[in-house]
Length: 156
Ligand code: FES
Image 1 (tube, rainbow, N blue to C red):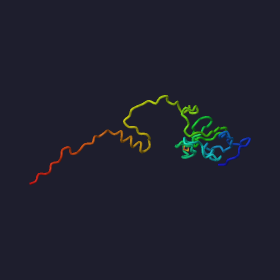
Image 2 (cartoon, rainbow, N blue to C red; image 1 turned 60 degrees about the vertical axis):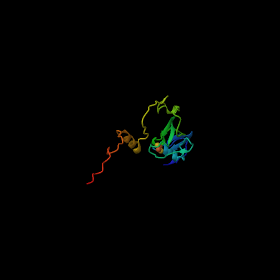
Image 3 (cartoon, protein in one colour; image 1 turned 90 degrees about the vertical axis):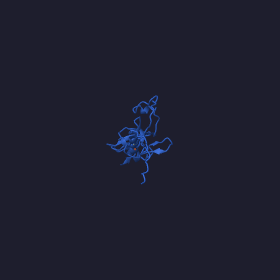
Protein backbone atom coordinates (compact mmCIF):
# COMPACT_ATOMS: atom_id res chain seq x y z
CA UNK A 1 0.00 0.00 0.00
CA UNK A 2 1.78 3.08 -1.22
CA UNK A 3 0.54 6.61 -0.82
CA UNK A 4 1.69 9.21 -3.24
CA UNK A 5 1.31 12.92 -2.63
CA UNK A 6 -1.34 14.63 -4.70
CA UNK A 7 0.11 15.36 -8.11
CA UNK A 8 -1.26 17.53 -10.90
CA UNK A 9 -2.11 14.43 -12.91
CA UNK A 10 -2.69 10.96 -11.54
CA UNK A 11 -0.24 8.33 -12.73
CA UNK A 12 -1.53 5.46 -14.84
CA UNK A 13 -3.87 3.30 -12.82
CA UNK A 14 -3.84 5.56 -9.77
CA UNK A 15 -7.05 6.88 -8.25
CA UNK A 16 -7.42 10.52 -7.46
CA UNK A 17 -9.84 10.92 -4.61
CA UNK A 18 -10.92 13.84 -2.47
CA UNK A 19 -11.03 13.44 1.30
CA UNK A 20 -12.72 16.32 3.12
CA UNK A 21 -11.90 18.59 0.20
CA UNK A 22 -8.23 17.58 -0.03
CA UNK A 23 -7.09 15.81 -3.18
CA UNK A 24 -5.16 12.58 -2.72
CA UNK A 25 -3.79 9.92 -5.02
CA UNK A 26 -4.09 6.31 -3.92
CA UNK A 27 -3.56 2.95 -5.49
CA UNK A 28 -6.58 1.41 -7.16
CA UNK A 29 -8.09 -1.67 -5.59
CA UNK A 30 -8.03 -0.32 -2.06
CA UNK A 31 -11.13 -0.03 0.03
CA UNK A 32 -12.07 3.48 1.07
CA UNK A 33 -11.09 2.49 4.63
CA UNK A 34 -7.64 1.36 3.49
CA UNK A 35 -7.23 4.54 1.47
CA UNK A 36 -8.18 6.69 4.47
CA UNK A 37 -5.82 4.85 6.81
CA UNK A 38 -3.05 5.01 4.21
CA UNK A 39 -3.42 8.77 4.06
CA UNK A 40 -3.14 9.00 7.83
CA UNK A 41 -6.84 9.34 8.59
CA UNK A 42 -7.81 6.87 11.28
CA UNK A 43 -10.80 8.78 12.64
CA UNK A 44 -13.44 8.43 9.94
CA UNK A 45 -16.34 9.88 11.84
CA UNK A 46 -17.46 10.98 15.28
CA UNK A 47 -19.83 9.24 17.63
CA UNK A 48 -22.67 11.05 19.34
CA UNK A 49 -20.32 11.77 22.25
CA UNK A 50 -17.66 13.10 19.89
CA UNK A 51 -15.33 10.11 20.16
CA UNK A 52 -13.54 9.22 16.93
CA UNK A 53 -14.74 6.15 15.06
CA UNK A 54 -12.78 4.19 12.50
CA UNK A 55 -12.20 0.70 11.24
CA UNK A 56 -13.22 -1.86 13.82
CA UNK A 57 -14.34 -5.10 12.19
CA UNK A 58 -13.13 -4.41 8.66
CA UNK A 59 -15.82 -6.69 7.24
CA UNK A 60 -19.00 -4.65 7.10
CA UNK A 61 -20.56 -5.74 10.37
CA UNK A 62 -19.99 -2.97 12.91
CA UNK A 63 -20.76 0.22 10.94
CA UNK A 64 -18.02 2.11 12.77
CA UNK A 65 -16.44 3.22 9.50
CA UNK A 66 -19.34 5.22 8.07
CA UNK A 67 -18.40 8.00 5.66
CA UNK A 68 -20.17 9.99 2.99
CA UNK A 69 -19.13 8.84 -0.49
CA UNK A 70 -20.11 10.93 -3.50
CA UNK A 71 -22.94 12.51 -1.50
CA UNK A 72 -24.32 9.21 -0.21
CA UNK A 73 -24.36 9.34 3.56
CA UNK A 74 -23.33 6.48 5.85
CA UNK A 75 -21.49 4.22 3.46
CA UNK A 76 -19.26 1.57 4.99
CA UNK A 77 -15.71 2.56 4.11
CA UNK A 78 -14.41 -0.97 4.64
CA UNK A 79 -16.84 -2.38 2.06
CA UNK A 80 -16.50 0.34 -0.59
CA UNK A 81 -13.72 0.19 -3.19
CA UNK A 82 -12.10 3.48 -4.14
CA UNK A 83 -12.80 4.84 -7.57
CA UNK A 84 -11.12 7.59 -9.50
CA UNK A 85 -12.80 10.92 -8.82
CA UNK A 86 -14.49 9.70 -5.65
CA UNK A 87 -15.38 12.35 -3.08
CA UNK A 88 -15.21 11.15 0.53
CA UNK A 89 -16.34 13.19 3.50
CA UNK A 90 -16.07 12.23 7.11
CA UNK A 91 -19.31 12.57 9.04
CA UNK A 92 -21.04 11.95 12.29
CA UNK A 93 -21.27 8.18 12.77
CA UNK A 94 -24.96 8.43 13.54
CA UNK A 95 -26.43 10.99 11.17
CA UNK A 96 -29.89 12.42 11.47
CA UNK A 97 -32.38 10.09 9.77
CA UNK A 98 -33.91 13.15 8.08
CA UNK A 99 -30.62 13.86 6.28
CA UNK A 100 -31.40 14.04 2.52
CA UNK A 101 -28.25 12.00 1.92
CA UNK A 102 -30.04 9.04 3.46
CA UNK A 103 -32.95 9.11 1.00
CA UNK A 104 -31.71 5.91 -0.62
CA UNK A 105 -31.91 4.13 2.74
CA UNK A 106 -35.62 4.69 3.08
CA UNK A 107 -38.24 7.16 4.13
CA UNK A 108 -38.45 7.62 7.89
CA UNK A 109 -41.90 6.78 9.22
CA UNK A 110 -44.11 9.69 10.23
CA UNK A 111 -45.47 7.72 13.14
CA UNK A 112 -44.34 4.43 14.54
CA UNK A 113 -47.31 2.10 14.95
CA UNK A 114 -47.97 0.95 18.48
CA UNK A 115 -48.50 -2.77 18.79
CA UNK A 116 -48.98 -4.26 22.22
CA UNK A 117 -46.98 -7.39 22.78
CA UNK A 118 -46.58 -9.70 25.71
CA UNK A 119 -42.86 -10.02 25.26
CA UNK A 120 -40.39 -8.36 22.92
CA UNK A 121 -37.03 -9.95 22.21
CA UNK A 122 -34.54 -7.54 20.71
CA UNK A 123 -31.61 -9.14 18.96
CA UNK A 124 -31.23 -12.18 16.77
CA UNK A 125 -27.99 -13.51 18.19
CA UNK A 126 -27.77 -16.79 20.09
CA UNK A 127 -29.22 -15.31 23.28
CA UNK A 128 -32.07 -13.54 21.49
CA UNK A 129 -33.01 -16.59 19.44
CA UNK A 130 -32.88 -18.78 22.52
CA UNK A 131 -35.08 -16.38 24.47
CA UNK A 132 -37.57 -16.17 21.58
CA UNK A 133 -37.63 -19.97 21.29
CA UNK A 134 -38.38 -20.41 24.97
CA UNK A 135 -41.00 -17.65 24.89
CA UNK A 136 -42.75 -19.28 21.92
CA UNK A 137 -43.23 -22.60 23.71
CA UNK A 138 -46.70 -23.38 24.97
CA UNK A 139 -47.12 -22.30 28.52
CA UNK A 140 -47.26 -24.88 31.24
CA UNK A 141 -48.80 -24.08 34.52
CA UNK A 142 -46.90 -25.00 37.60
CA UNK A 143 -48.70 -27.56 39.66
CA UNK A 144 -47.98 -29.48 42.73
CA UNK A 145 -47.44 -33.17 42.32
CA UNK A 146 -48.81 -35.37 43.69
CA UNK A 147 -52.00 -33.44 44.04
CA UNK A 148 -53.09 -35.27 47.15
CA UNK A 149 -50.89 -35.64 50.14
CA UNK A 150 -49.46 -39.09 50.56
CA UNK A 151 -50.73 -41.16 53.39
CA UNK A 152 -48.26 -42.68 55.65
CA UNK A 153 -48.11 -46.50 55.28
CA UNK A 154 -50.25 -48.32 57.77
CA UNK A 155 -48.36 -49.81 60.69
CA UNK A 156 -48.88 -53.42 61.64
S1 FES B 1 -15.18 -1.48 10.00
FE1 FES B 1 -16.93 -2.52 10.66
S2 FES B 1 -18.38 -2.09 9.11
FE2 FES B 1 -16.57 -1.16 8.41
